[in-house]
Image (cartoon, rainbow, N blue to C red):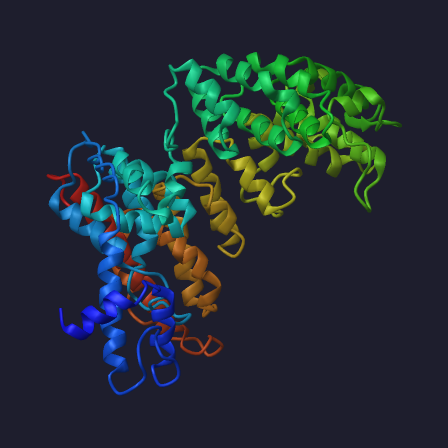
Length: 544
């Protein structure tokens, strides 16, 4: 150390903050303590700072070493085939919005194929490549619809990573057992502690997991704290009982009918009405049957309706909302709720032993048909009754494109969900053949993937007809996007004839032919890509 440095170090107290302030202001504006002003002042300041730094560091006590990071858990599942791993990297590298405009061009949208890829990989039981986990978690962070499949594929190492990066903490909430203190389902004390002390999301996850293994234990756990829970939490906990709803839940739900929250009471009543053998369902059946009868004195057997004249306390306790919405008559409002909650098995015996098809075909007196059939429609959806759903849907080729109770496309879509996949696809195919694609988007969304051959052919034929008619192609972009994800990949070779740019009619939208050609090119390319993806996940199978 130089003489000047030694002098400064000995004479200057270690006023670190003063040295920093002097350095920021400059020695021409402020002289460091104990240093004479002059041309050597900047050098003296640096010497003082160097000496102070040594003193500060020498005075530090060694810190306790951090706990060594535990290795990531092993994933026992088999690794991806190399081609499938490369495909996953390409899907994760794609980012939406790269085209920068409304016209998508002929290139497939890779991010839209990622959900199907994950579903197929999970079905085959593969483990995610470790190097793909960060990109996979980033993709799941940005798209909540990807999270269940992505976290299942990512496996235990994703949770290990999520505990190290706050951006991925969603995985700890979304994945079963993701919480840092999540107990095993055979650890009663840990379960009780998490139920009493955990965050709300952790408690919901715990209740759902426990219910899937031991429904009685889940109900007992919920019953312990039910009276002290907040109303909004009681509602969410009650809603979790929808999965696996069974007759054993009736006692608990009957107790919830007396809850101080109206929303909780209504949800409990809805769940009880979905149990046809419940006491509430029997009470609703008796009330509804008193309002609906068969008049056999007319030339044609006719249903007659006498709606309730009041909503008494017993009806309100069973979930009937007394106050009707604006513009709705009270009596029709009460009637609809009674019929909706009554078991559909009530009506054949009440209306002459007729089948659901025969019942919905009967005339209804005094203009009550719309209200009655709409309530039956809601009951069929709630009770997932295929026979009544089929009757209320009617024939897909009917002029009104549905049965008397299906008054909207959304209601038809809900009724279709009660049918098996094959019947659902056949009904929608018939609808498209008669009515085209303009109203079919919601109906296509409830059909199983890949679409059955009759449905796929109906969609492609309707798109081809729309193209030849010079229709605005942008009107069908949603259906075209569904076709890319839902058509069977084996249909690609049948679409080659649609790739040419068609002659445009005089009244066609300008550039429509080119757009249609691009859209069909993208469809064919996407189908072939999907076929290749499945083949890569199943080595030894050729791509379609």
